Length: 221
Image 1 (tube, rainbow, N blue to C red):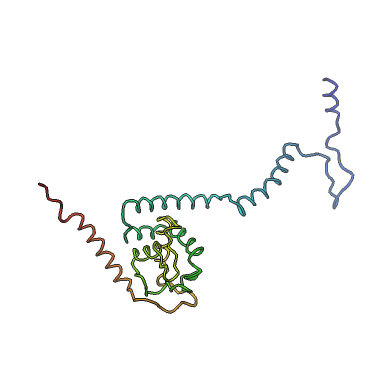
Image 2: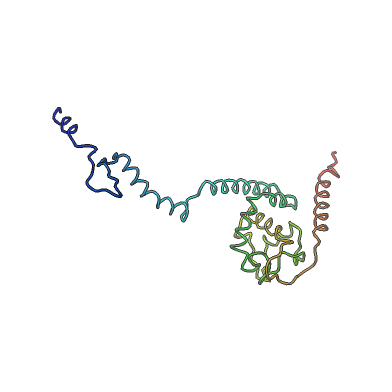
């Protein structure tokens, strides 16, 4: 034991190497093994991290936050849909949620842009950015059209492929397209629906629905 300690202490340290660069010479002083180990681990880990988080299924912190917010609003939309018939007010609530709009925009671009254009300008299907609507321009009209589809004109029935929360998100995204100016818009089709008139009709329908729940209460025996 004594000899081994003596041999380690007698090892040459801080010896100046023979080579030099621009008059600068260096000591032969190797790095600690733990430091070298961390260095090599970081080199091996970096490409794995990049492939997993930037090109694979991994979620970065911002993506995790967006995913959790989107899940919250989707759950909220499912609960609203489960409470009864989807109303204009419910869809306007979904429209006010950025996470739901983002979800609806992604679904629209992946599933609806082939017929309606990437920006809603219209292609096979009608232009969604003007004030003319074939099947109604109220939020519930849009939701119903997406849900039931228009099979005779080639539009799928999306209720068989998307849950109500995602259909609500798509309807909310379509609502944001009105009044935009996409490139090469398709000529108007259907009937003119003024936004103010649609809003008034929506408000009137909500008031009548609420009044109907309070008026004419059941008469007891």
